Length: 78
Image 1 (cartoon, rainbow, N blue to C red):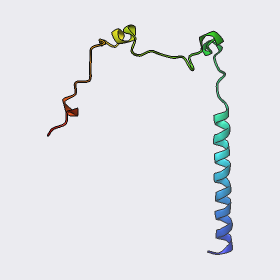
Image 2 (cartoon, rainbow, N blue to C red; image 1 turned 90 degrees about the horizontal axis):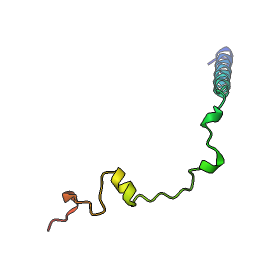
Image 3 (cartoon, rainbow, N blue to C red; image 1 turned 90 degrees about the vertical axis):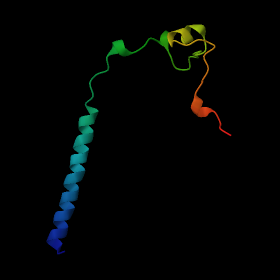
Image 4 (cartoon, helix red, strand yellow; image 1 turned 45 degrees about the horizontal axis):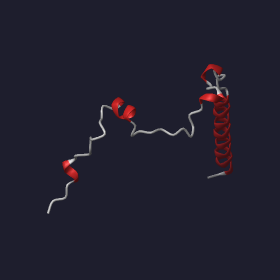
């Protein structure tokens, strides 16, 4: 490669870097956050304990307390 070709390659690399910077700037133009989507402090869900074994949860899932995992695939054969 001669010197002119090397300079052209360097210019191409600079153009690629500029295009990436432009893409980053476009990502920064996010729409304003809708305040209605923010939960008030009294309704936080993080850290809340959920009892999936309660009668209410089981009934919503259509299960009963006596339901067991009866998969025949799990049984060991001698």
